[in-house]
Amino acid sequence: MNIRYPNGTAYHQSAKRPATTMSQTTNYGDRGMSLEAELNESNQYYLNQGVAVIHKKPTPVQIVKVDYPKRSAATIKEAYFRQPSTTDYNGVYQGYYLDFDAKETKNKTSFPLKNFHAHQIAHLRACVAAGGIGFAIIRFTDDVATFLLPASFLFHCWDDALQTDGRKSIRRSAIEAHGYQINPALNPLVPYLNAVDQLITATKK
Amino acid sequence: MNIRYPNGTAYHQSAKRPATTMSQTTNYGDRGMSLEAELNESNQYYLNQGVAVIHKKPTPVQIVKVDYPKRSAATIKEAYFRQPSTTDYNGVYQGYYLDFDAKETKNKTSFPLKNFHAHQIAHLRACVAAGGIGFAIIRFTDDVATFLLPASFLFHCWDDALQTDGRKSIRRSAIEAHGYQINPALNPLVPYLNAVDQLITATKK
Image 1 (cartoon, rainbow over the protein chains, first blue to last red):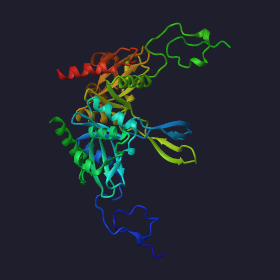
Image 2: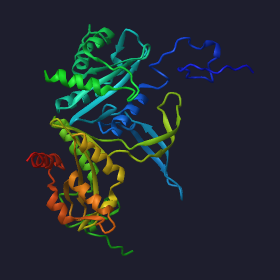
Image 3: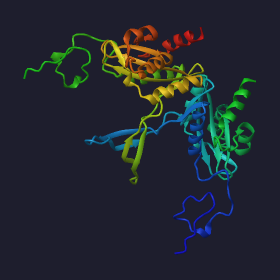
Image 4: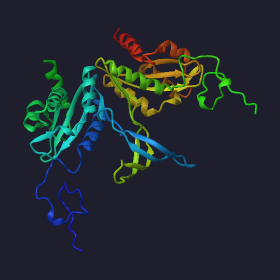
C-alpha cells in the first residue's frame, strides 16, 4: 500500500481522505483546533499568568441512572443533554465580570443569527443589566478571522432580525466595523482580552 | 411493629412517615429543602427581579458513549463524574463578580475544613486576585443557621489547617464573628446578597 501521510498542518480526517486531495494552501491560523479548544487553552494561559479566571461551563446533563459498582467509580448509565440556560463562558478580569459565547461559521460574508438561541441573548442582556461585560467571539473559519462583537451591537442585530423585513444575519463588514479583530498569537492562542481592553476603553468614553 | 419515628427536624422522607408521627415542631428555616435547592430558588428570584445573574454550574461529566437513536434525542449511555475545577456558583451583581461555594454540616459547634477541596480554595484565591468577590455559604443543619464567610477568613483558616498543629475545622463562634448571618426569608429563601452588601461595605472601609 502506497499511503502518503500529510506533512501540512490542517489534515483533519487523515484516515478518510486520500493523500491526493490534500489542500495546497497552508493556513497558519488554524492547525486543526476548534475555536473552543483554542479558547480553553487561552483561558488556561490567562489563569496561569494570574491575568484572569475564565472557564467554559460544563455541558449540562440530566442524569437519570447511575451505577455504583463496588470498588470502582460511579458510572452514569443513562443521561440526556439539557439546554443550557446561560452562555458557555464567564469569569473575572480586572474586577470586571465577563460573559460570552463563542461561535464559528463557514459563511464568508455574513454570520447567521440562528447560531444564537434566544435564551443566550436574554442571558447576555441580564448580565449587561447587572453591570457585566457581555460579548460574542465570532470566527469565520474560511480565513480564520476572529472578532469580538460587543453585546450591544449583537442585541441591535438580534432585535432587527425579529422584524419581518429584518436581516437574519450580520454582515461581515458590520462585524469588522463594530467588533474588534483578535489576531492569533502563540501565548495565548486567542488573545481576546486585548479586545476586551479596547471594549472597556470604548465604553468609558 | 413498634417503630419509633424521630420528631426532630431533619426527617426528610415524609412519604414513608405515617401521619400520626408528624413532627410537632415547625421549623420555618428548613422545610426539607437542601441549601443548594434554596440557593437555586433564590438565584432565580434575583434573576427575575433583575437584581443579579448568578447560576450554579452544571456538574462536570466525562461523556464516553452516546446513542443517537432515530427520531429521538441523543442518549448518553456511559459517562463519569469529573472533579470540578471551580466552585459551584458564580455570576454578576451590581458590576461585581461573585464566586462561591455552598456547604452544609451536621456538626453543631464547628465546620470541618475537609468539606473544601484544595482546588476550590485555589480557584477562590485566583478569583479574588483578579478582582472578584469570593466567599462560602455555610449552613449548620442542626439549627439551620446560615452564614456568609468571606474568602479572606476562609483562606486564613485553610492555611492554618495546613500547619501540623493547626485546627482542621473552623469554630462556629469564629464563623459568627467573621461571617455574616443570612436570615431565612420568603423571597428569596436565602437572601445572601444582603450579606454580600455588608461584605462590600466592610471591604471598602
